Image (cartoon, rainbow, N blue to C red; front, top):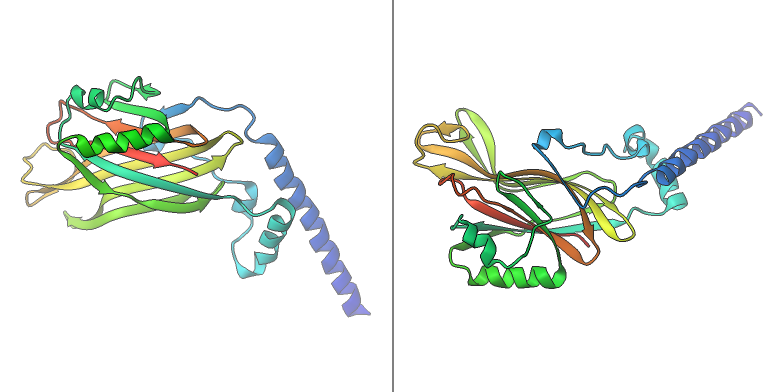
Length: 257
């Protein structure tokens, strides 16, 4: 009898916890996404981006075997999280003059600033045409096509490149990206932090980044942004600084599902 009473008590605890969990998750679903933000928000530096922390469920419930039943319960009640595939393409442009942008025939950007960053929200047809123009422009170098598969309301990071040793410390050189996507009915609400860097040889003192034995790390793009990307569209970012002769002009295409 005592064992039966304990089992009933355990079931009541599980039931009460499950009901409380369902109420918390339901409240989060009903209260988020109230007011759509601006189509493009750029933060002055990656450290200033207000990257969401995910739901209370993600932060409170451990991802361990003992708590696996709560994750299964969440999926049973609210369904599995929708998968998000993010395809990226990185291009390096030898010419950093203003004529480079005009030659792409992109029209007025959705965002631009005085530091040389420009962002366009483009449809699939426009992105296809942009890729064709890159093939025709002299000095354009294709740097990579990283792809990441994640889920809604999940932080994901990807790095494509290499590590080099400078001044006794290990440094990553290449593309680093951190994403946090949310799927709306008409668009993908994407938080993104992008860093594109390369190793540079024979750089004189005074260049940006650490140096060692004639080798330095040059950061060509360092962007933190929040984007409202319409369905069937993507985003193209271009950061060009003609006054900095050692800095490569970099363009990045991102396409969500």
